[in-house]
Structure formats: C-alpha cells, structure tokens
Length: 406
Ligand code: HEC
Ligand code: HEC
Ligand code: HEC
Image (cartoon, rainbow, N blue to C red; front, side):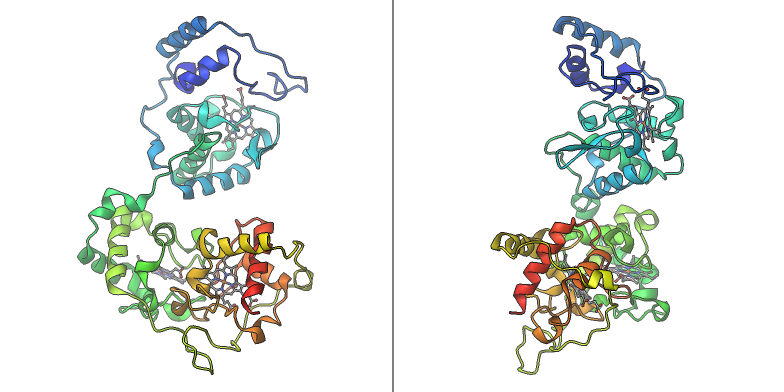
C-alpha cells in the first residue's frame, strides 16, 4: 500500500524472499482467530525488481522525508516511549519482546523487530494520525503530545536493533558553546525564586514547598553525572523520580538555555562541608544515630523479607547498582562511597541521606521498609522513587546495604 515509503529496503527484500517471520501471529485476518498462513515468496531478483517498483511508484505523499531524526533519540526517550507503549494500550494488540519473551496481544502486527522494518518518517506520520492509514489502530495516541509521540516512535525504531547509538544531548553543539554570563541571567530569572539568589534553597517560593528546593550552594556540580543533571533540568523533577515542583525547563529556555545554566551551576557551586561528623570525630561517617522521620510502609510491606539468598553474587550485583548503574542516579551520589550519607549530593539535601553504616539506626529498618522506600521514594525528601528498578535488583541492593553496617 505505502510500501515505497514505509519499509526499509533490506527488510522488504528479506520479506519478499521469505526470510522474515510473519507479521501477524494469527495470520492476516485480524478479526478472526485462525492459524498463521504463509506468505507468497519470490526469488532474490524478483524481490529487487518489486522493491524498485515500490520505491518508484508507491510513495506515500503524506510523509515528510526527514521529519523524524533518528540521531536525536536519547535513552530517556526510549524509557518514556516504552512507558507510553503500555500506557496507551499499544501492547494490547501488538507484541514486543521483553527479556527474550514475546509479550502483548497477538492481534495485530508484531512490533518486536520494528526498528529493522520501518522507515522512521513513515512511522512518525502514521503516529500523527493512525486513522489516516488503518482503522482500529493507534487512536490511543490521539491525546499524546508531540514529544510523547516522538518518544514512542523512537522506541519502536530501536526495537530489535543491536547496539543502537543514542543521542547524548549534553555533548551537543549547544553545550560546547555554553556561556556562563547567559547562564547567570537565566538563573536569576528562572531558578532563584525557589533555589535562592545564592543557591541556598531559600528563594521566596521555597517556604511553601515540600520537599524544599535543593541547596545548590552545597552541590559539587562538577561531580554530578551530566546525564542526570541534564534530565532533571530539561525534563524536570518528575522525570528522575523527584518532586514535580522542580519544573521542566527544556521547552522554556531550550537546549542552549539548559547548557548555559548548567555552565553557571558548575563554575558557581563546588559543594558544601561534609555532613557533621559522628561523636568519635571520624570525618568520613555521617551522624549516628541519625534522626529519622521517614514515613512507615504499611504492615504488608514492612513484613516482607528478602526472597534472595545472601550469596556473594547477589551482594556484588547490589554493589554495582549502588555505585554505578542504578538509574536515574547511582545511590552513592547521595549515600556516599561508604554508605555513610556523605555522597557529593548528600550535603545538599535536608533531611540528609540515610547513613547505612550506622547500626543503631539501621537495625530498626526492616527489609520490606527499605524495599518500599526504594520503589516509591520518601515523600518530602530528596530520596527519589526508583520505580524502574526490577524487584530482584531492589533486593540485591538491600543485601548490599545490609553489609555496610556490619
Ligand atoms: C485495538 C487493537 C490495537 C491497538 C490498541 C493498537 N493497534 Fe496498532 N494496529 C492495529 C491494527 C488492526 C492495525 C492494522 C494492521 C494492518 O493494517 O495490517 C494496526 C497497525 C499498526 C501499525 C502499522 C503496522 C504496519 O506494518 O502496517 C503500527 C506501527 C501500529 N499499529 C502501532 C500502534 C501503536 C504505537 C499503538 C499504541 C498507541 C497501537 N498501534 C495500538 C491494532 C491496534
Ligand atoms: C518552582 C520552584 C523551582 C524552580 C523555579 C526551580 N526549581 Fe530546581 N528544584 C525545585 C525543587 C522543589 C527541587 C527538589 C526536588 C526534590 O528533591 O524532589 C529542585 C531540585 C533541583 C536540582 C537538584 C536535583 C536533585 O537531584 O536534588 C537541580 C539541579 C535544580 N533543581 C536545578 C534548577 C534550575 C537550573 C532551575 C532554573 C532553570 C530550577 N531548578 C528552578 C524547585 C524549583
Ligand atoms: C538524590 C539523592 C539520593 C539518591 C540518588 C538515593 N537516595 Fe536513598 N535516600 C536519600 C535521602 C535524602 C534519604 C532520607 C529520606 C528520609 O529521611 O526519609 C534516603 C533514604 C534511603 C533509605 C532509608 C529508608 C528508611 O526507611 O529510612 C534507603 C533504604 C535508601 N535511601 C536507599 C537508596 C538506594 C538503594 C538508592 C539507589 C538505588 C538510593 N537510596 C539513592 C537520598 C538519595
């Protein structure tokens, strides 16, 4: 139908020569339950000829070539796109692969390999109004915003693709030409009403906010991973599991503005004093016992126990997550290299991050309580929700945390 615009050439040739699996798990009648049927195949030469014919004569004039730039797809887009795919019911009729397994309704086209099949501009045009193409699909995207649509199309274009190269906006042109003076003006205009003129978190709007705006004066911005910093400023607090009171600035000040304000933050704020030392005067460990006003999980959660065995492999996996891989931000950035709450961002937060090295405080916190806080965050504090972490990784983290206070 629109094959000259719709498909990647290599895929089309593979398809026509019978080298691709069927698109519909149940055959080609979506309104019937029937077993799958094979599709007619042709020789390599014939497939080439048919593809050439399609590319010349079956061009979809609604499609704008270059409308979707694959080089601009970020990891964040993929995370959002995957969420939208489920949230907007796409998974109800289209299958995808998760952990090597096909999941979703087998009612329409399988999309597990869509990144190797479609042309991105066609897919984007389809997403703008699926009803222009085919009834019964994608009406569920009608209320998506353009950024949401772009993330779901970006997501589909990565499915099945090995080693997709993601865009890293903080390496873009705008960042190499970032300007501190422009950043200073932006900070005064857009950030100081909450974060305060000197970054102490005491702007006029701060009094009504819970959690309080971060104390930038105590944050060593040079040490904070750029991916995190970019996302929290460009897409707002919610995008990293933090408070939605931290607004999303990308649409207001643009990529250049975000680059400029980050340049300002980096030269202006280099960190605060370490969190007050313990009674023994050891500089590197946080207060112990630590004041703690954390909300209690319900009994159902508090009583949960760690289902994983306390093996070295699980503890090591938890250690890696804690120090390196947990997204949106590794735990050590706040809880510290040693788990004492003295991470680079720890001093900027009030209340301070939990001191996991303090047995007196930790002995009263059950595994289930920790599980609940890691999953949902601690409301009104800097402890964000790690809602994207699979359960087994949360339990591995808890096993590692338990080793810190022994
Ligand atoms: C109620 C079932 C249903 C839901 C929900 C649904 N689709 Fe579809 N989708 C279909 C049907 C039926 C078609 C038509 C297939 C055809 O014409 O071959 C289709 C076609 C498509 C196609 C074109 C496939 C092709 O190769 O022609 C894409 C891409 C697509 N849908 C994406 C989506 C996305 C993204 C969502 C979520 C916003 C979604 N669909 C939700 C049933 C659904
Ligand atoms: C309406 C109030 C408000 C404005 C305006 C605001 N912020 Fe924030 N910001 C917050 C709040 C509240 C938090 C704490 C969020 C949390 O801990 O959940 C925060 C946190 C942050 C953080 C730290 C995130 C972390 O992990 O602790 C950074 C960085 C930041 N803001 C940068 C900025 C910049 C740059 C601007 C201006 C372009 C800005 N903010 C404007 C309210 C605001
Ligand atoms: C942006 C800073 C930050 C990051 C990153 C962070 N935490 Fe926290 N965490 C905090 C703060 C602040 C508290 C204290 C919250 C409170 O007082 O309720 C806390 C508290 C906790 C608690 C104690 C809950 C309780 O009931 O006392 C656990 C467990 C925890 N964090 C685990 C983690 C794990 C695991 C990670 C990484 C996956 C992580 N945190 C990443 C800031 C952070």
